[in-house]
Length: 227
Length: 80
Picture 1 (cartoon, rainbow over the protein chains, first blue to last red):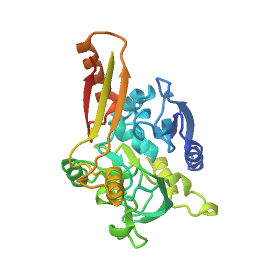
Picture 2: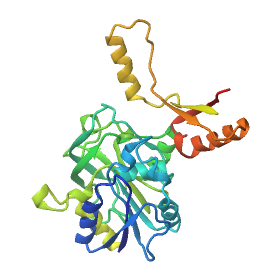
Picture 3: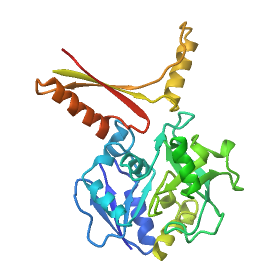
Picture 4: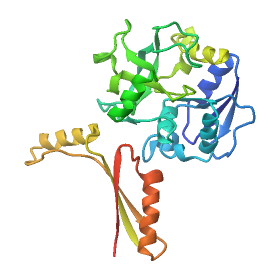
């Protein structure tokens, strides 16, 4: 599919995600944050990881108000697919495309390590290549990944099955030490109401080669091919 | 005209930074610290002289950017 990867000042994972998209047969192009329009025929918008605007003010806050975000909001409103990874997830919550907020990690440290995730459902455009209940291992690297929202929002997300991934251990057990940042209900990623917008803290784009530690991230990009 | 915008976390929002500062103050032996919440202060220079217009502009600035109203409250104080 045609993918627009938005580049903000301070984005740094756009190269990785472009490679992962190409590898899965997609056609990604870079789009500058100050542009007002997406390339015509864009199927998927990707907000990559990094430290847009140096994380000034709040992570993702300034990028969330960039010129291109109106076009991204319109794309999402039409049911177009949007994927935000790490800083991209922070931008999605700051721009109002997803609810809640990503707070400072509970233990106040930047975490950079391999992490197991439970794929909560496999009937979405982003996860259909995974097996139901599958546990995958991908990388996490963030200082502000502690997902918080008011009780009503958490109840809605859980009730509507909008949790995409949960932090877990190798056996798929959720909770305790398997939660790397204190996220409510071990939430690692969430969907929008129509399941066309996915925000996630972990980095599937970095796990697409055996040579660099695994291929569990491939499923996400292969899922999009089938979408 | 000068203004000060204060952005603070809403009650009930977990503040791990405030907690760490609170712990550090207590470990310094400073008496009487109950709890600490961390916030932000913005000092803004304003071009015009219309206080009401400035207040309205800063309220918009807070709602659009300076504060995330999901988790933060804000206060606008205009000097003079």
